[in-house]
Length: 368
Ligand SMILES: Cc1ncc(COP(=O)(O)O)c(C=O)c1O
Picture 1 (cartoon, rainbow, N blue to C red):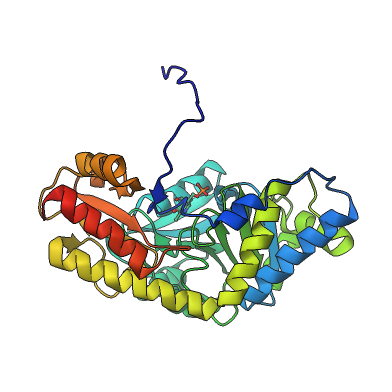
Picture 2 (tube, protein in one colour):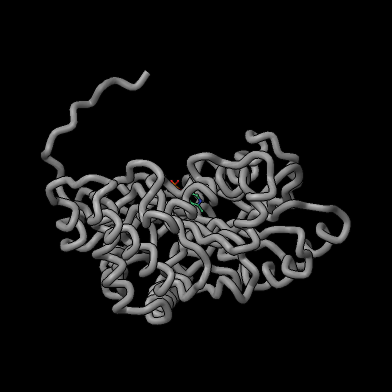
């Protein structure tokens, strides 16, 4: 059993290069420290409508937007409950897509998997084959497989699913939305969601989801749906009152407001470009020093999974870089990839220069 380890206020600051949580701007952190106000006050309506509408502008979408007090995992459950009666198709190619399939099974859904080796990307033609032979209420796909560093071809997958109007498209974009631009409407995405601690570069604790009109209608026609993450409950409350149905994490929403203004100033496309440059730099470095785990042509713009071809002690390198440089990056995901890979999160507020500081530190510690 884990014993209590007393929390002290005495921890050195570390620069986060994790695949989330990531670095948060100082003024965004400061925005949270305000006297509390009530979640039914006019001020709350100002705050919530500002963050919802700013998010639509940033994502360049006319779809509905929900910002909920929860981590992104909530929307695995809610989108499944709201859109799936019986059957769901989930391509699995890493830990998070497997978890998406597990969540749907736990909710009693009949889940068909298309299984890929970890490191491989989902192939749109496999989705087409599955949809041609079976009827599915929804396809659930992870856009950015954080465990393997694969960016799936969501656009092409969405174009295939669009040919099947009774099948809804659910996208987990948790580790990339905000750092990897996507045209939500053009590719028929019915619900795409993220957690704030990733490429939005906010503190953890809020989840964001867009909802198409068709997905909203679909939930209305179903006998059961999520209560907390129900599209109708959350969006109807927004329409009527401009607030959330239950008490939100107000300080986090204050931080959200501040950071979303920074994101709007930079713009979706410019943010995408900065992330692409960081990813290119990281991949070039990894190719030179190690190898890349993800399939060629499908590599993530926010997380690089480096294949440990040099056999360095990953755990030891992470610990030493943390101790000597106050920088934290991630080992490989789970027992499968723990020592075989390590992961660098180049998302949020990072720049090529800040990523270079980490790769220099790794080179120094690992004696490369
Ligand atoms: C792709 C993906 N999906 C889901 C999750 C779970 O997100 P959260 O912990 O915010 O619920 C993560 C977390 O890293 C993720 O990377």
